[in-house]
Image: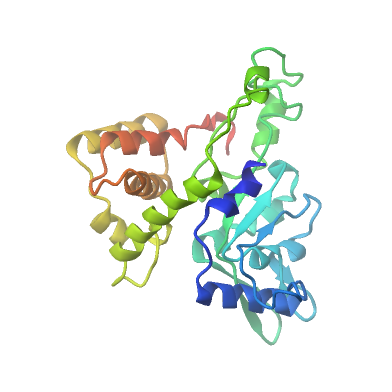
Length: 282
């Protein structure tokens, strides 16, 4: 449900983005005939039995796969560890570059693949490893084998990974209306406008596209934030890629808060979004 709501809070497609998405779906034959042009961001949710060809594209006459059909939208992978290892590892390059290259003997094809990856998984095969009211049926070795299906390099390329506790009855039965997607989308669009203005001379559009040079230029931290980030890197043993991800996410958090400077609370929030216990990730 959370994954399906994400496209509703993302900024609307620009004309160039809509034309690009329309071309991809037109090639595959999934373009809605009545609309003529894609007006909303795509949401793709392939099954965990999908092959790497179905995911990244290919065939004797190469065609775009699910990651290209999710271009400018959301690719949702439910039960992430159940996907074949080669499928998951094939996501690393498009997550980094925003495109996928499919090579054949005489020619190589480049398909656009700039998507938001959203994935979900249980903490163990039975799902009760972190549940305080029900015991997990598996030992540490089985849990480690399950978690290690997701490689460290792939995990490093995911900006945010958090644990969600089971929902209590009181929360499920709550009748009070939650904040609507329309209101959240307005905040997102304000933050995106800040980023468009920031990067208007850099050839990019939002924080996630920053390279190391731009991170140093635009992610200015106060002294307290610098100390907090240093402590997190030392204590948690995070990678250089994770360091960049934290800075990018904290830049976005500060944009949502309307702050030019990245403060300690923004860094703290970004670190929390990478707080999964890493002892089972290899």
